Length: 501
Image 1 (cartoon, rainbow, N blue to C red):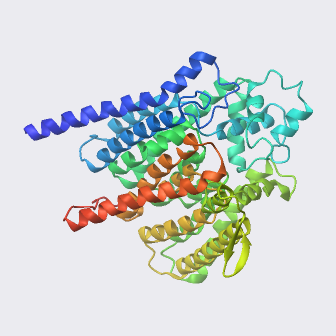
Image 2 (cartoon, rainbow, N blue to C red):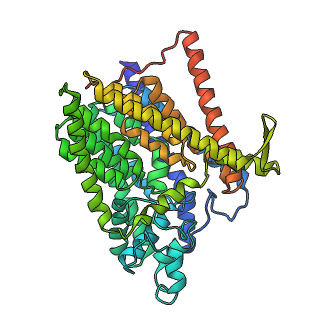
Image 3 (spheres, rainbow, N blue to C red):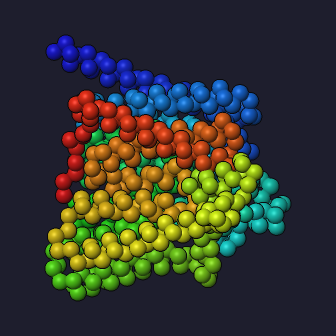
């Protein structure tokens, strides 16, 4: 009895500490807003204390200390039973913590200002952002946009000279929110943050509805990485997760294949990787059809439904095939990936070549070759996966989602541009993985956020991408070594939580 009371007191203390640390994260944002009164003109990126680059070592160290503290409490919550009594109590706590992060300025990502800029370009100035860039329009119409803080902030964004790199559903969302912001940047940012806040709570609830495991909602809802990247930095991948979870919910729980396809098409209309789930959705639903020909027929039929929805989405903006140009341009760039790491290390060592098998090869050419090779491996294994799925008579969702997880890893490795917030893509199917896989992915999400501080300590530049990759890998390997040591001494490393379909 005394032990239970002590445990409850410890949990209460840690819940309060989690809130206090979250508040400490947003103090620099409050200081900035008190000083400036607006986020218009904000461009102090990768600087936790927003002090124009002074005392970088100190501010970075403070950030790491706070993040590690938040992560330690989070991992305790995951491994401790009875932290939350039910989903209602959890959602209230997640809502309280998430509201704190809403107050955080996007100090290590300017993507949200690109969302706003292309939205404003479309909704206010009636330009098609798939064919006209923010920079082009502002340069041609500087007098027209003088009183528009949204488009002006978009103009100073890194991506301002690039047409839209997202799908049409994303662009539709951007346009709606900028339209109702009436050229006010502060209002617009708040609206985007409120949207992510609501989506975050809905994702927590959907995960619980699908899995019936409160622990999985804790894993998602209180992950410091997710709070930082999607409440603080306002990335739109959280909306992709929402639509993809809805697709799985209607597939698994409601047995509604059409609605499942519709929501998957919405997810793909934001970011394209979710199309990889399409064969899984169709073939799992029609798993009782033993005839391969009948399965092929259903794939064609519902594949055409999916394509019809995508056609309607793109019809809003389509003029010609160049609408897909920006998507390809984005992937041709190297950023935060193993490929930019190769090129970046060369720059730091004042070389752009390497001697390999007696031949001198350019580092960029080597990186490009490696990326294409991994993409070919991904494409081959994914096609094989789909064929195996087509001819398998007894399809179990857990098994195919484990295999999908491997394909998604290969797909991420094949991208020239990688960002740590892409890891949230795994949360769509995370809860069908083995316990050790779930833990590994969670550690990688936390490690990537710590590794991201290399740009705070130095500067935002691809030349430090190799360090980002190495730091993430080192933290992950240290954790794996700890788990191995626990096994040797007889400690338990398994979670007894698994979704059964």
